[in-house]
Length: 220
Image (cartoon, rainbow, N blue to C red; front, side):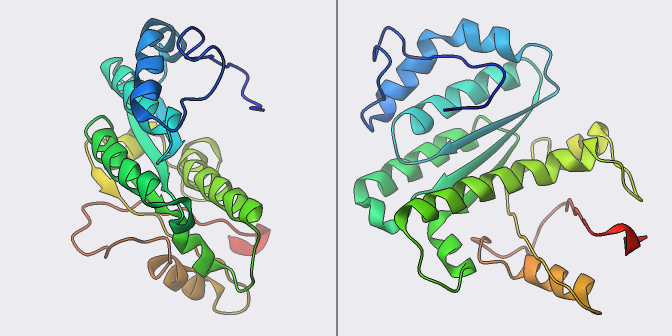
């Protein structure tokens, strides 16, 4: 169950409370049927994150509709989605590719996290359930890494305008995470982030960078 303060049940009539049956068209139609309600919920938002696990029905089909509504309202719209694990099958992979391409046209910035690469970040065998939990955690990290820049006071503070400058109409984006301890922790963490398994492509040619550094009280 979602812990969100505001929940919107899309597809109440179309699917009668059930899922989309891994059919993106059903997911799209469910969101379209409730476009006005989505618009009402998003009114007044300066920034909207659209997160989804690509490859199924609801997220793949519904995410572009939500993003379209958010941008039409003038919100900075950021997509943070996962690409399915290989073990989920070819059909979900194909649907994910199509869904990602569609979503890319509806957001200012799109971050795609390849689930398979999450496995490269662990040195142990994990269960399927833990694999999906890891994917959820990385989605959270992607969103929180951006929002913390605005909401958490730091030695060097950014505001929404700074983030908007970097992320508005930015297109595809990459996300890397690094953690370290010891004397050279800053350098090691930065090198880990740049070489993160989450990066699907090279950072060469990047037009902007958002860097979030978190540490203990001794950081300053």
